Image 1 (cartoon, rainbow, N blue to C red):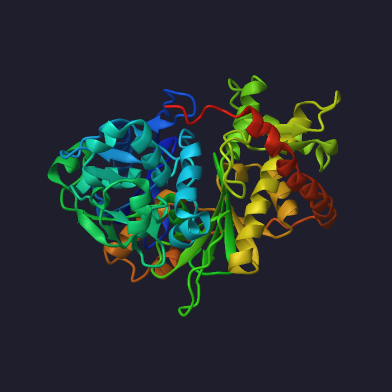
Image 2: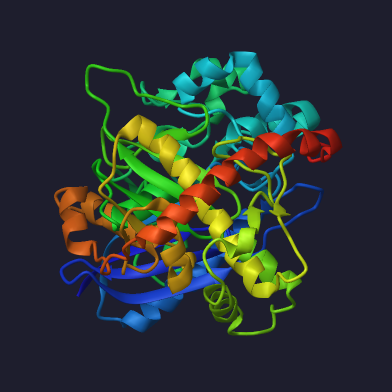
Length: 507
């Protein structure tokens, strides 16, 4: 049995899958959590060696389940986007990685955009710099901790650090490079102008390769730790959003995905005409896809599943194994609209469409009779409204959609899936592929190893979708009214949030 190994370096855990290419069967799946460190207000950091140790555990786990008769034909990787790993000349991390959720560079990102000009920055990079993006983090470090950058010889993203441990190869791919806000998405190379504005040397950034390109072979030392045979080809891999899109078959325009994980993402494939420039919008991220010559529009909200996890905590349900089932049942018992209660899911600030690290979450319209069920329903509806904002702006660049594919833990809740369908007014099909990012990484390995001729061929074997959840017309009409009210709240409350402020950019 010939297998493909896919590894995903997520925000909360590392995942590994062993994928059987001929049958599209997942032979084994394993995960290992690691912490997010918060050493200062607004900080979010992780120790790169903990990623590696988690990879060692999950790879040993999946290969033990598969048995000794299996042959791994290739290894692929995906990982959390935007994050910054600083290495010295010996490839040792100088300090913990500063990940995408870090908010200390919020003010720096605004200053950096102004330095280049917001319109020009977005036209080059496909995005404005945001708190936690590599460009913003480096600009903040140059101001607050210059000695760290003076001692840095390589700057990598999370999955690229793990591949360095696998192969000794220093590189990245188009999709992860694009997520840094230091990349010229049209030229498909690092932007000298954006790098100069940040104030770092371009020599610190890695070479950029195709996502399916074989970056190297598994080193004997790494193979010994992982319990694998040395010499297995390892492909460059891609960022986690295009990886999950590959597992959902999103390689061409017409269908989008909505992911309700810790954060929330709207992913819409984009194929600009060959004769025109890549369209951009400063409220969104337009990045290079892992599929050659394709792009995608990404709308990202910072708190989706995290908002429900926050409610679980304040409701003192963290000790209950059925906490999310309980919250879903409570929400389902409440009529659509939650009796006028609205929730702004800006617990960590917000990206699309506001790009505002100072905005905060709010319940609007609380009354005495609102109990946990109303709060749960309002949280689910508020997340759906925020995702609809991202989806509508994305469609202004990509055109109309025929349907949506839902993924992430939020799709396991039937009531949340129905709420999203009713808010969007489009049929939503849940993907049946588990661990989409790791599966997407395995499919990249399959192309690089010659098992598949193309990503399109790989997707034909892999994609599996549930029957669509259809919107309920009367609910959609009600949610259209509530959505209008939701969209009015941020402009009204923004002065309040900015007047009080948050010292997230303090060193």
